Length: 97
Image (cartoon, rainbow, N blue to C red; front, side, top):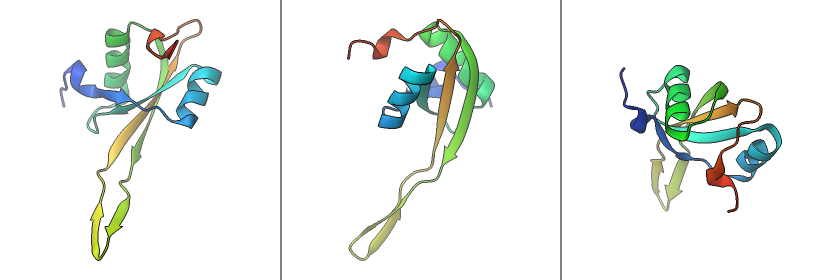
């Protein structure tokens, strides 16, 4: 499947764990298009954010089941990408926040 670079990365995932990964191990976590693969994610991060990527780990996250009274629903499934940057690389969008 041929995806546009701007369709691959949805938004960064900012949680306590992702902040620890970013500060301690130079890794950044993104919510990505479920159809994207590791090669497409790497290319999209390098071209849009102008950084060098060492490796990409991905995971499919199952949507949670939720109940509201007697009605039951399900949140959407989504894909998470953990991008490891090469030594010396840094993203300025998270600095100074």
